[in-house]
Image (cartoon, rainbow, N blue to C red; front, top):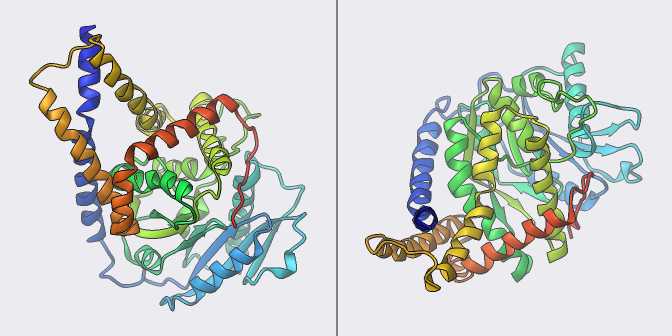
Length: 394
């Protein structure tokens, strides 16, 4: 039992590790933000291509395009909506370019990643034909997300090849807002540190920015890594693409600027969403779609919430039943880490959503992590959906 004593002790002391990640992430973010091209828009940049893939969410896509066009950015914004051939709303999208993915198009990808790969190859062809200059930047969003003006401005100036924003949930209901507090915490601790040391874990399809060289060079295809040609990329395409770009030597950056998202509207929607994420990542791990080092980061840190929650919670009854013995010298520090844990959560949530949500986030800390643990377990038990399941947006 001595080994278990030390294991639980280390886990209960983990907030010291997490606050270190948080502080180092802030430091690396500040260091990278200083590497701007004199604060000016990238030299010779002619346009921003802002693309959103969707399967019929016309109103929200049009509203997002209108919002971004109204930012008054120093570079022209060209909006692209990417839809499937069967979409019956083709004439309703208010976009500069409506990209229709032919039903006959095939690649290593399915669903959303297939649509994104088609649009990417279209831009390759346009560059080859001379109808598109390489002097563009690509901003990519989801049909339920809106990038902030500050995020887009930072993308124009920061000296990085590919960048993600910080997720800012829009309160749409108590339960699902409480669930998505965890995304603020994850962005503040993990994304800000690992992405800014060029060792990314996650990415956000809701808000990604890249230079044209990344877009023209990096595909969503699995051929670089998948040994079985039958394996297809179904979900977690943003994570795969971001890590693939990093593996090819492109510099990465996590912006602290906001990308506004709508949390799942119901608990069932949250199950669908988390299940898709979990099995997308498990597919990457199982089929070795990324190198070992990258898979270890996903397995250890990407799933840390699951195993840390399970073991730290289990440690409480084990201690009071006398099954484990926490050294007396360690106990005062474990009490301190509880307050440190609250402080981390209050800061990361409050920075994104304001002080009222910071207080709510602290008060509901254990509710939040318990709900997210339950979502992951339910998603795992339900099994691999083997398709890209979408959730209601409004």
